[in-house]
Amino acid sequence: MKTPYLMVASLFLCMLFGCSQNEALQDELVSEKKNPKGSANHLPPEPATAEEAGDNCFYTHLVAGQHHVAGSVTVNIEGDNLIITYTATGEWTIGITHLSIGNCDDDWAPLNGSGNPQIGHFEYTEPFSSTPTEVVYVISLEGLDDNFCFAAHAEVQGPTGGETAWAQGPQFSGKGWAMYAELNLSDCDSGDDGGDPNQPS
Image (cartoon, rainbow, N blue to C red; front, side, top):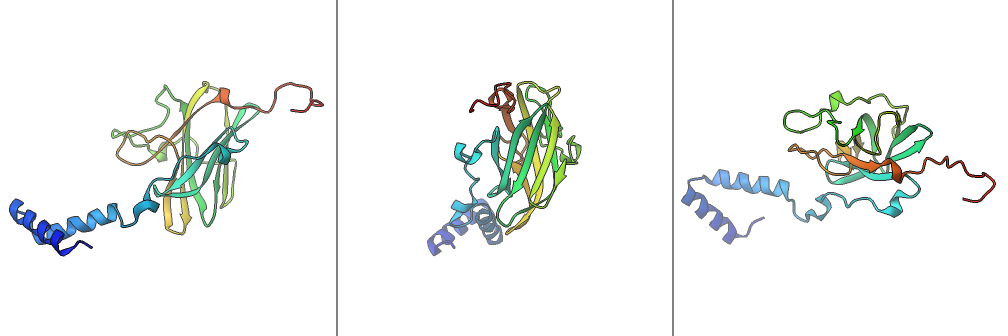
């Protein structure tokens, strides 16, 4: 809550510039909703660490509602396929998912005129397997260059209710907070190196 001095200053500025007291109070409420007190827990989560990634080719957070880590999205290679796995953690569960993938230098994701992704046009919506805490997509490597991008979207439920979630990464150019991830296949080990299976790795 503003101190009396700040309230008086706000009212004076409103009278000076022709706004009403109601407008001033409304602006204050909007500001508090955007920047709540003690907003440290409302900042976007820090990027995933190498320790969290473990043995996965690629690991990133599944971010719900811009501020909550609801789980993870991992990428691995098995034979000629990418395995993209959404995993919920804690009290979170995963509902409907959408996935778009392609070469980063192409127009790989369906976007609207404002630069926001159109999840209804994402090419993958039917996962290989699905439970409330894990969704797995199996995607052919055919047609993918070494450098590729993907956008992993999910509808999740958790302590804050229903939320939209994205695999953490750079944001699309639109005004929303939708994100995508970028990685290089050459950074991944397919697990099939053709070596002597009797030799230690």
